[in-house]
Structure formats: structure tokens, C-alpha cells
Length: 379
Image (cartoon, rainbow, N blue to C red):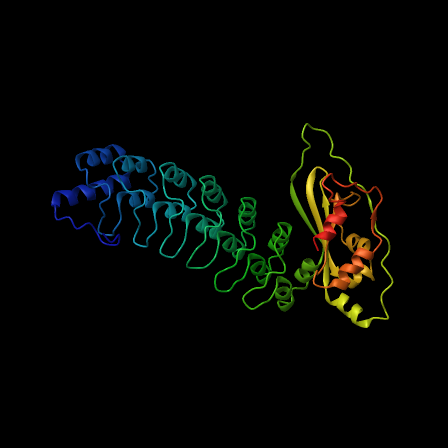
């Protein structure tokens, strides 16, 4: 039966029992409600003239004590209202943690979707209801909570509406930070930039958002920031990033071993006799990333033109430019250099650069050499 239609029973006595049950629920009279349910085994899901079941009436009037009684007598926990929302949808939309808890304990479907594509976690994320969202995630709700109608995940909605706490919760729960919005192909980072939300831009970058992913129109996050005339964001996207992982503990206790210190010489003399080579090096960007494992995994990242790396500032000056205080003075476990591998001249230039380790690691037992040589072989 269409949930918007009232019960079509022609039994006057039955209709009277339904009316009395609904009134007992509104009044919070559990004893009378249980008596009516025992005497009439077919009224638990009967709807009134407005299309409401007794469960819906209990939720509407905050009579939570009546919910278990109705469920015990066969009321359908998934019965939708006139708009197609289950009781769990309604509880989440009201930010009602006790009712959401009760419904989940009684087996409510955590992945039920409304005709508009809203799943409970998607709704919680869009409204910024952190406690309800935590509860849903504890009950194994899919962290993406993809809405097929809007084409967005729960994370995208939380970013779009500026709910920082919810964004952090979803990221910590494993949400896809670069999940695209269907249709526009935008990612959460693009939306945070367009909304001018500096806090969320920083949070997404700290969690590893890909600044190079293009949207539907081919624009990267950097281009979105430039076109929005958000100078602070554009500078942030170009500046060094510090990504932090979980705390690292050595098995059996004790301190982790010290990493060897990398000695990086000054930049090489520029190839002024080869203007084409100099132009190519200015056109391509390199990424430098230091990995720290002293107590907590940290990755510090900087990007710069290949020219600056080889012939301009040099790698150390690039890395030192905006080094965060939390890693200042620390020695990285190793440093990773990522360069455009389709340019053989750049690769040869890097390999010929006399970078070396002050206390070089020996081969690791599998013939793979030092961490730096391994990094270069990945290019």
C-alpha cells in the first residue's frame, strides 16, 4: 500500500482501535498501547488518515518509550513515511541520538536510501551531526554513503557545507578524499577552494588530497584557486605540505634508530649553452618529499621547477624554505625525489648530480641498494 494513503480497512472497530492506539502513543500511555496491540494483532502498522503508522506518531511526538512496545508487536521498522523516509532517516534528520541508537539496536537498515538518494550517514554529514555520524559508522555504515541522485559522497557534502568536524571524522574513517562528484567531476578540495574555506583546504591537503586531479572542465585545484583569485589558497597549494600519520612504536619498546644525514651540495651550474634544455627544466615541476619515522610518521613535501632543483636554489634550499617547526632539526629517514620521467635529460641530470649519503646504507640484503637509489629507480 502507498504509505501516503490511509488504511483502507472498512472494519469500524478496527479503525477505532487504530485511532485509540495512536492517541495512546501521543499520550505516552504504554499500558493502553500494549493492551490494544494484544487485542488487535493487525493494527501495529495500520495508518491513520494522514498516512502515519503508530511508530511514526511515536517518533513525531518523541514518545521513545513506546517504540519497543510497537516493535515487539510486529511494527515494521522500515515502514516509510509519505516522503519515503524510514524511521532511521527521520531520527538522523532530527539529530536524535537516543532514537537512532534504539532503531539501530533493533536492526534498522543503515544503508536505506530515500527516493532522493539520501542514506542516513549522507544526511548526518550534510547537516553536520557528528554524534549521529559516529554512531552510524560504528554500526558499519558505508563511509562513502554515495547519493546516486546528487552524485555526491558524505565527505563531499560535509566539505560543501563547511562541517570541519564531520570532514575529519569521515577522513579518519577512510573516506575517499578524492571521490569525484558525478556530473561536475569536482572533488572535495575543489569545492573547499570555491567556498573559500581555508580551514578545510588545509585539512584536506594534510590528509593527502591530490592537487593535480582535474575537474570536468580540466582545471586542477591550483587553477581553481588562481581563477577564484584566492591568493592565499594558491600560495598554500604551492607551499610545502606536512602529512602526519599514526604514532610509530618500535616493537619491544625503545627508540627507533637514527637515520643517516643526507649531504646535498649546491645546485649545479646552469646549461646556458643549451637554452632549450633550460626552458624545458623551467616548464616541468619536481616534487621533493622527506619521510620521518621518529615517533610518528610524517611526510614533508615541497614542489618546485626542475630548473630550481638542479640549477637554481638546489634541493636543500627548496626544502628549507617553509619547513614546519614540528620537523625542523630532525633528520629524515629518506628523501624522495619525483621528477617527470618522460624527460630523459632531466633524469640523466639527476643521476649525474653528486648527491650522496654521509653514512650510506649498504645494500639491504636483496641487492636493492640505498633508499635514495631506490627512489631514483622509481622515476
